[in-house]
Length: 219
Ligand code: PRP
Image (tube, rainbow, N blue to C red):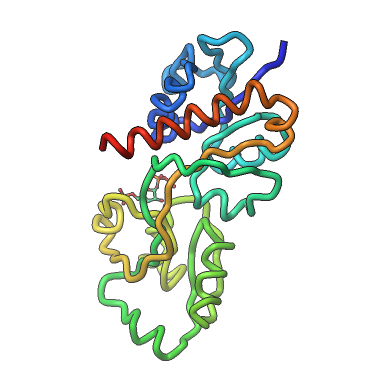
């Protein structure tokens, strides 16, 4: 029997992907928040969900360990998107990537002077391209989380991070000074799977795309 594997990360992406999967007739048998299982079966024979770190989703799909996945644009840009077909913007996990500084930091003056800045971020590649595009010299410091701490302890002048409600910035006395780009999650597909398992993969992609379009109409 031909099998279909979907790579998802726990939390918001999983929760917001559930209704889209349901539209494709796929219902995971367990909740990854309560189950420790990494491979979760579904109501459909041969269709399973693998639970991976958000930043690992493109890798699983690129190598064909998963046929489909859901990954944020932030993660896809850092990964580079090689070997991935990205047919649908799922319009979930919406937030923005922004430059943030300590309140009172003279960002406008820094940009104007073309001063060299230290930037702490998880998104090194995206940030490097962004500052290069502005003609600014940025020294990038790679972090894996809690970026907001970096300007507070003198590790960096600014951070590039995701902002959703803005509560994390506010709680740490930081302000967003410039938007880098809007972010949302995308459906990613292994191109070989789309070709070789077309009868199985294409209906799922189409049902998800239709559910996204339908939700946009009824919103
Ligand atoms: C993200 C991001 C910010 C926070 C922004 O972190 O890195 O820290 O959410 O959200 P807010 O604007 O609503 O406060 P997340 O909680 O995803 O954890 P992470 O540090 O592992 O990325």
